[in-house]
Amino acid sequence: MEKNKIVVANLKMNMSFGQIKTYIDKIRTIETKRVVFCPSSLYIPYFLGYNYGVGIQQISNKIEGAYTGQISSKQAGSMGLVLTLIGHSECRTYLKESDDLINEKVKAALENKLNVILCIGETKEQREMLKTSYILKKQIISALNGLSKQGLKHVYIAYEPVWAIGTNKIPSNRDIEDTIRYIKKIVEKHFDFNNIPVLYGGSINSKNIEELNEIENCSGFLVGGSSLKVKELFKIIEVALKE
Ligand code: 13P
View 1 (cartoon, protein in one colour):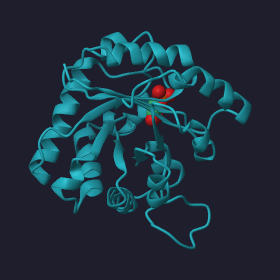
View 2 (cartoon, protein in one colour; view 1 turned 120 degrees about the vertical axis):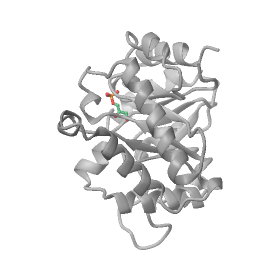
View 3 (cartoon, rainbow, N blue to C red; view 1 turned 120 degrees about the horizontal axis):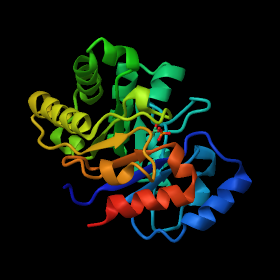
């Protein structure tokens, strides 16, 4: 079993300001940086100043300047944020983020001392066409292209099958374990970097976390919908972070 797992709460574009204040009131007791919250960027300042970690869901590939509507890794780092998600399937789909753009974002984040959670995963169609390995390999190789070993030390990969996000469907433990092994192998082979930490994400809840936590080579969890309900999230944290 992996030690020092992390739990990352991706709150996505949820909750009004009033709801966020109530939410923060409930989570402020968390005393570990192994739990990281990624709220809407608008709310980030309200999450700061406690003992959990704070990350950002989305950053620009640019560092500074006339880029209306964007937030840079330099700005995020200067606020004390610990990580950024990059390449989430919702950004790949709705914002049409390309592999090249994702690679630029990863480089920009690492240059500005932000840890990166690179999200990868296959769609239902790709899985049915037995293209999962091909897709994951392509996503990994393009996103990490040109990184130094020093840079890779600050990267987590989150395996989030697109068909498992928000659907209550999840792969079997055996499937996830095999996929994590495959992801690590790709990074070893193409970047000469051993044992990159891999998280799982997709329909995690308080009922399936005990079983998911049995996965041997998993370094933690990226939680969407269940992170909006504090009780659910606390159960997930309790199971995942117990030694
Ligand atoms: P759900 O937990 O809602 O399936 O979302 C997972 C996710 O996209 C986390 O980034």
